[in-house]
Length: 492
Image 1 (cartoon, rainbow, N blue to C red):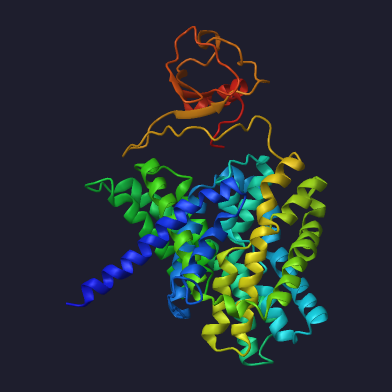
Image 2 (cartoon, rainbow, N blue to C red):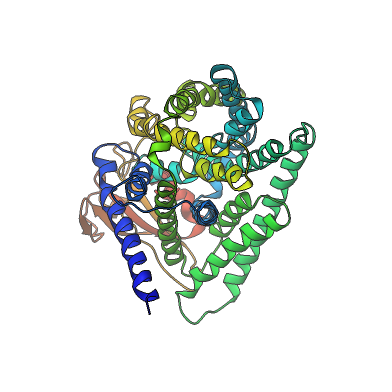
C-alpha cells in the first residue's frame, strides 16, 4: 500500500516543476530570456545540487524520453509547415541540413583540436554533437515570439531545423562507434550510409503520411478525441519503422507530419491543437529532465572549454559555414548573417551527448558536460539576441502585424471553399474602404473583422482600418483574386 503515496509524491514533484516552469516562462518575454533556459534551470534547481535535492542519473531513461519528446516536436513542426514554405526553402535548407551540419562539425572539431588539444576522435565527436540547430528552440523563438520574418528567410530557418537532426544523429553514432573501435571509421563508406538512411527516412515519411491521410479520410471514428490518438500512432510508426529498417526515423517523422498536415484531415483544428500541446509538454519535460541529469558542480571544471567552444560555434563555425553554403543562392548579406547567427541549440545536442555515455565511450561524460555548458551559453548568445537582431537588420516582413486571433472550423468532413484571415496593411487598397465597397469575387464575403479586442460584424458601412484582421470565406479558385486585394493570408 506504500506504492500509491510514492506515486502521488512523484506526481506532486512533476506537477510543481511543470507548473512553475510554465509560470516562469513569462520571464522569457519580460527579460528576453530564451524559454528553453527557464526549463533547464528549473531542472537543475530541482536536482541533487539544487534546493530540490532530487538525485537522477538515469541516462537510458533520459535518452528514451528525450527521443520520444523530439519525435512529438518534429511531428508537430511538420504538421504546421506548409508545402509552400518547403518549396521556398528546399534547396537552402537541404544544403544547410547536410553539408552545413558536416561543415560545422568539422570546424568545431578543428577548433577543439587546435585551441584545446583534444584528440581527434573526441574533437570530431564533440563537433558532430553540437552541429545541428534545434527544432524546439527555433520554433519557440520564431513562432512563440511574434516575429514575422520574410517568408523565404523564416522557411529556410524552420525547415533546416526540422530536417538537420538526422544528419547530426548519424554523425554522432558513426563517430561514437569509431571512438569505441578506433580505425573502423571509413571516410568513403560514411557518406553512402548517411545518404541511404536519409533516403529511407524520406520514403518512409511520405508513405506513412499518405497512408495516414487516406486512413483519416475513410475512417469514421465514434468521437472526435480519437483522431489525435490516431495521428499520434502515425508519429510513433513514422519514427519506429524506418529506424528498424536502418533509416532516419527523425527525418521520417518530420516528413510524415508535413505530408499529413498538407492534406485534408477530419477535425483538423482540434487535432492540431492537441499536437501543439503535446509538443510544448514534450519540450518542457525534455528540458526539465536534462536539467535534472546534469550536476552543476561538474560544469565548473569545463567552463573555460565550454565557453571557448560556444563562442567558436556562435561567431566562427556556424556563420562561416552558412555563408559558404548560401553564397551561390543569392541571399542578401544580412539574411546570410542572420541565418548564421540564429543557429539555436537546445535539448537535441544534450540528447545526442547521451549516446556516447550510454555506449560507454571513453571521455563521454566529460563531453556531455561540455555540450551542456555550450547549450546554456548558446541560450544567451545568440539566443537572447534574436528579437533585437531581427529588428536591427529590418528582416521582419512588411505588414506582419501581431499574430491574428485564431478562427477555425472543426469538421469531420472536408469543407469546400476557404476561410482566410488577412491583416490590413496601410499600403493595401482596401485600407479605408467600407466593407460594401470591397469588390470581392462572386460567392466571397467578409464574415468577421477583428479590431484590437473587439469582434465587429461586417456591416456594409464598416470601414476597414489598418491593423484590422479580416476573415473572408471564398471558393478555392477565387483565392488568388482575394489575395490581389488583401495580400497573403496570415496563415501562409
